[in-house]
Length: 537
Image (cartoon, rainbow, N blue to C red; front, side, top):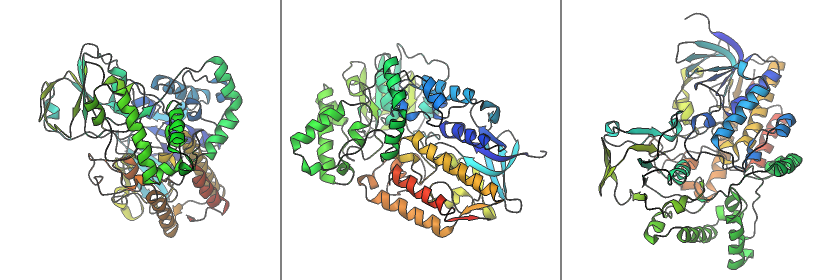
């Protein structure tokens, strides 16, 4: 196979985090390359091309903050930007800083093996090419491994069928066609609302309903964008100070207000953009069951007011978890879609799917004739992208073996037994629980500083200490267990009925829910203390 291509650093993934990571590394003068499995950069925003795909973070809080030139010249067109514009933005960033020359596309990493004698990683790609690097930075993305359900006869369906993550690059003709959407999570809710008025018939196959609240999107004018540019320092300072990485800041004192006062506050938040109803709400809703129940009842009433058929409305209201205790989808006219004559809710708790047929889906209640089936069935979140790579560390131990019952990391960046492997937006970091780009800038900067620290001092090996890793795992568990969602059935707890070992009752502590400011303080303290808890040799 010949000699491997050698670099100081290999970055895996050219999404939001990988783009910033390669920028930081080449600015240091390091010989670094990005290996991207897809045909182009963008990660989430390259793959997810389904109708309705867009930010649910305010656009101007999602973009990078590291370059004043970039901030000054980019005009976000909508408060919550759509996928095509998001991809244009990331391409603009790569072109502005001439980053493409450091990227290789169609380069899927299949295997990584640690060489203890050389203190390097050997990487093997799907096409047989090999690389060697002192350091590897995994920028794999928390939602990059889609999962499908397992129903009898799925391959028998003769029409078009695809997961939203694999939505075709060519336009899909939906007009006049009978479409089935399986799943009503964040993606499903976006798709359903967007296509309801385009298709002849829409069948929504729902296993469990999700809470959802209005996105309240709108255009950003030239004048407003100018005001945003003037406020960028303030905006990013607000994001840094808030637990969720947004400008929205929680309030406290739920029981200090009357029920009428609370309802008036919720009316205002429900009409506000983005996650205001969740993260600018009373903090008690995440800890106090009575407080959360009252808010859930309020949101349920809002759903009932928007859905004409009271039977359908009740089926769209979750009973197994309170508002905000799973990943909250944001929507535009989602509930109103069920008022259309061409939209039918198929409640799989009443009539489960028996099998797929060449012409549709057979439930216990009826056969649904379909031309297109869309799987909005989610992802093997946080750890799934790591499981797809055969990663072998010290003594040949695999990462999959170590993480079989859940990830174990040091601040979500390192995992013992796998030296010189750094994770950006990795398991047990704050990236899975906050506004993603704000968290990844913290992660990329910290990883880059650690690599620079090691290189300047001649360290060839960087590994988390066992006790330090256990202390961080304990911190992650403590932060998780104090919250009401600690047993919810969603990716916050690692639940995915379509992934072995991720079923109900097997909690995986995958993200840090101590808040972005606390996380940043902790990693800054570690760095200031000479990278306490890390063996540098």
